Length: 154
Image (cartoon, rainbow, N blue to C red; front, side, top):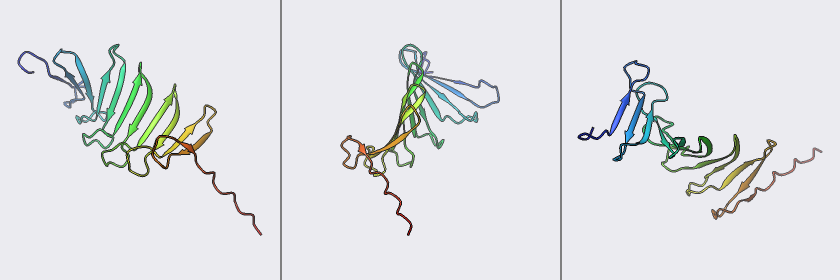
């Protein structure tokens, strides 16, 4: 509480003595975010943000459970549309996922540590995949060179 204003509510839903849900309220007394303990051990490691209609809009995760957000998932009316992740724990996102309905449509990677993707896997609806690259970092991906043909045996 901050005077008569609710700032945070802590909840132990399963009554095991450990907090597993944290509700954070803004000055307008509306929920700004909900913290969760994904392993039900009292350690907050995920945060939900909601759209005006009440559906999930964004989920931030501390995948290493160190309190630092390392994965952000974005939702549209509760459906996952995109995600970004810091896979090497350097504090910068280096993997981006794009979803088309229920299916993963593309995954892009920053293998050069410049902060933008330089390699992308694009998945077709039939399950096939092709690789694209953006060596210059301009945001313009082109098909990767095909692998060399196997040499004929003599």
